[in-house]
Image 1 (cartoon, rainbow, N blue to C red):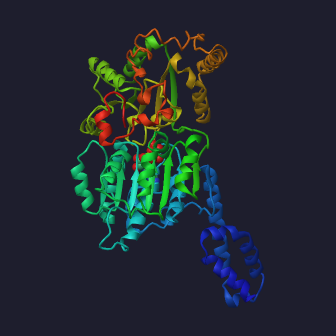
Image 2 (cartoon, rainbow, N blue to C red):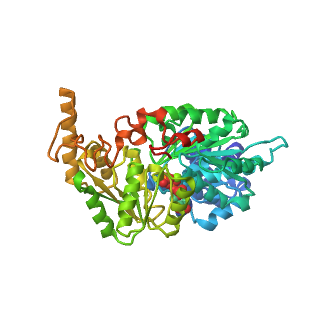
Image 3 (cartoon, protein in one colour):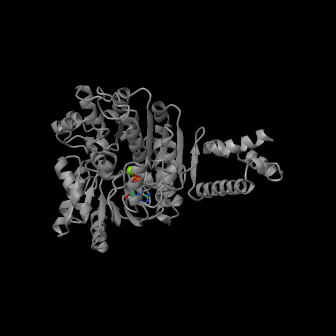
Length: 543
Ligand SMILES: Nc1ncnc2c1ncn2[C@@H]1O[C@H](COP(=O)(O)OP(=O)(O)OP(=O)(O)O)[C@@H](O)[C@H]1O
Ligand SMILES: [Mg+2]
């Protein structure tokens, strides 16, 4: 009997993973105890009953929460979600700061926080605008705080590292981290291309604990041995699928090799295509996989997705009419190439519409200034290449307008995800011409998953594309034609011609080239922002 009571008592002291595993057994034993008089000498039956009911309620609440938010976790001994920030075992100073901004964790935060706080490697996939940044920053800050006591005099370099594919995203994460600077006595450094190396080195000499970097610039510093990462024990790859897919892989490998052997690696994104999974595992070893919502490629359901069909020749007019129709709204417009961004900017300005563009040929100062103006509302229309497709959290963007359909479907999900952030609603409008027929099938899947209306034209485009593919297979050429004029008749040039350069000029290759496709184009990495690349990049867009 004593043994049984002891077991029950120690059950309440166990950690929650073991508790949930042993819960049925504990319930049985507790009920047995409650039936026995002897119990009262050892344990108060009321207390026991109350504890049991609390545990059951918690257990139910967890189950309901997991189901409600469609949270799936794979991995050994994953902890249950933290339904409040207090439950996430964050140090008080950090807790106070986060609770001054938000009432409760978002679903990805509630499940990622306990996993990351336990020290596990993890992949966290959750829709755009769902709060992934804090899901990796709060554990990073906790980690830094805990490891401060281990710092000796010879300690150099940061403890935690966040890698991002774009400079703008690095800047944004730094802004969020800086909010915790005072409460955590945190030193932050951002290493990105396009900004002063000297300044970054000076900041590095101040012994920052958190580094946020793009791989190109960081690698430059590592190669020149001006920086070292030997004390980094917490690494995040934000937008991880992009980082591994765009040819950053060798750079990431070389960066990770210079970090501590015993480290925690976390990867986050809203999309997780099959072709990066294996590569990611290479970096992660044993890890926990967390997914919120559909495991298929999926868009945020707060975004209303509209598709606007037009001929290639009418595209510009359709675009201008749409911009007029939307009136004085905050809008982010995406185009595929730097040239088209410039062209759209000029076209809107000619109509006295204040719009500003960003792309890889603009200086970092120009890029930052445009983003700043767009954020503050001084400029209500920003036009961008995919440089702005991922991670950027700009409040109040009501519309995302895709002038060009993105070259890969994951980017469609990220682009439209610049609206509908957090709990806000938003609308995306995508121009779709016969040139985009090859994307129709994937687009239909995304629309279906997000419970959006599916325009019948998309099914027709799917048919055309299937016909094209079969013709190509049979005759080895691409001149299928079809109900919409044949989307392969691009050789004739004109405004939208991709073969002859024309307005879109996609033949010039690089990231946007349909002939190579970035997946086959790793060496021509347009995301690379190392200084060496800066000098080379004149045409292709870079990130
Ligand atoms: N617990 C919370 N409750 C409410 N809003 C939150 C919470 N945590 C973060 N947010 C807000 O949600 C917005 C989106 O957060 P964040 O940029 O981290 O999203 P994300 O999941 O990284 O999106 P993306 O996939 O586009 O990178 C931000 O404005 C952030 O301040
Ligand atoms: Mg993000």
